[in-house]
Length: 163
Length: 426
Image 1 (cartoon, rainbow over the protein chains, first blue to last red):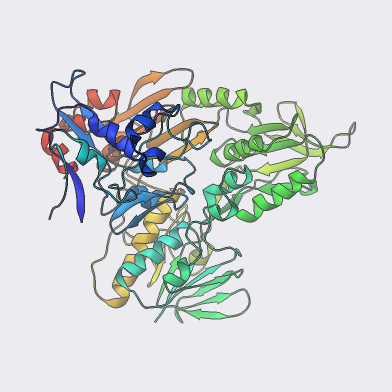
Image 2 (cartoon, each protein chain N blue to C red; image 1 turned 90 degrees about the vertical axis):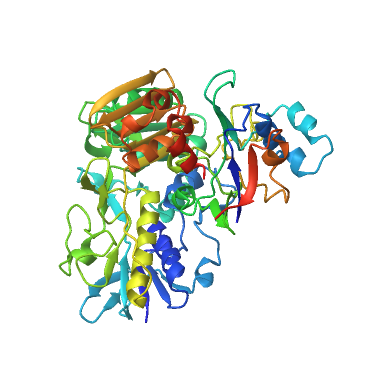
């Protein structure tokens, strides 16, 4: 299956992938709103990115790379999920928002640190659903090319089939 | 040909999913003395607290789970005995069910120590299963006005119960927690982290009586309410009593037929007990904890699922004589739990050199390092990306091969060398 891979040699540490991911996966992005990027970031709740950039230095001059769910063959997050909210469909690990209670057992078990807990003012902050974890689903739920891949200005994030 | 599973919780579901990876056809019978399809035990406090988006969310798998997996639940019946020579199990209604491979996933039961006058307490409940919270909910609703709830046990179960009572509390409801230990959550927190969480719970009006036990349950002569007389001299009125002192593994079915048991059922790495064709998984078993190098009862859901899944794969492989068996390895104690928005993630054993990194009013971070390896950690407050620490323990990564100074500050893949990082992100 196609998965997302990163090329740290190409990563500028610009964080645009985070911006595109957060906006595309916000309600505005998923509803197909025009100018969803502007709309998503104008709301009281900050949209939450499923990808995060790690940078060696504060000014991004050293090593930078993006990290998002690896969609593991043995997904410890899914196996350890206490509610059954996390599951695998056709190799893609995704979360059922209606079942996640925010116990964060998946945060405890994910070896790559790819489960995202929304911040204080993040998605769900205004409707009591901030506890729901966020994670990359390869943009399958959007039915589109992963937003991080599309938004990367330097080809540092790719989605492809690898052996 | 048939697989039989005794128990219907996380380990049983793991086993069904494990068996079906190898063997798509052979029927699976699942026997449970509870009358529900598989539900998540840790969710009972969320159910009671009204935190689930609908009652059906307590179920661990979809309603068509058994049908899809060619599994046949036999509910509301208990297994009285395993007949290892005939390879059958006897049920409470007299029926016998034949097995080729049997899984014992019987979990654990509440442990209630003897207490004077306990038999006279009318509204007493344990906090282990769906039925108990259904009964507690109706008992709470049947009391008019403010209610007084007494919880014995300041462990994971007792405090999750306390939190759920708070969620559905009425004005002037009173929640008191008594524990023999002088601190809360002693199984997962050290003294300092326990104090932080205790303060946090006290802010939500949960009262603690620690380092003491109930001497006698009696009736308050003044108001006729039930009352606990504590060894520390205090008297506590209550309407409802919750017994959350501890749990004991259900080992008797295997013990009765001569299977090896320690504190729980002993198995090899394929989850096979010492009885041929009888496997065991979940809270009724011991696991080898790689962080301490000892056998422990790791009564936690992820462990139950993983053990059950491994058991299922191995049962199917040996049944069909094909496929390769999968050892269950890298088990460690680990917990993710939160109370009123303050989260805790812990893993491993608290042995070796202590490295305290953060200590604040709502935050705590401590590592335990031994022989060049991370063996345990406690995180309170900021728990982000904790799994990176968990993986260091499970994989027993030598700390001189990573940048532990960087990792200590924040869990991050930058803390691994370039090659290791590329391997992780491949």
